[in-house]
Length: 178
Image 1 (tube, rainbow, N blue to C red):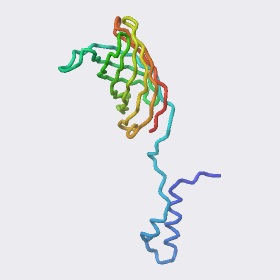
Image 2 (spheres, rainbow, N blue to C red):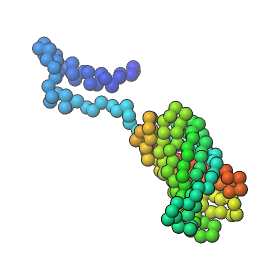
Image 3 (tube, rainbow, N blue to C red):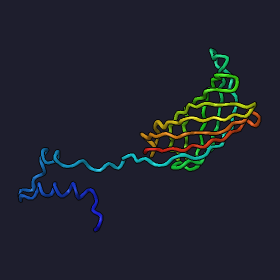
Image 4 (cartoon, rainbow, N blue to C red):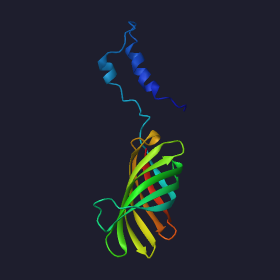
């Protein structure tokens, strides 16, 4: 069976409405009874994730920061599904909840090589053993630009960071709708 484009499903009722030899356009009632056209912007759930390498810099505290707050400037270079080689710069807030535990959060704008951007927010927990830290938590996709306009979804992020080398890495696994 040969594929019939969606336009034929719209054209056939229009032609039938005009077939009375009067060659008149269809009226509003005829048009309102047509099925909606298929949307080309339909979002589809797809597997999403990848790996990022990071460089860390400790940022100065802001006026009014509590003593248990640490601010980090983090630059990412990533390889992510649907974006390819991607970069990001984030400002992360780390709130120490104990001697070796913390909660961290940031918003990220991943920028693909073609300029499309993906917006996400992340909040997770971190545990330190000296200068080395492990962290994990959910990342929520909140939109984007280009093909990611209106994107949604989530991933699980887990990784490590070292305050000796001021580097880190993380992996994410989840789904994206765009």
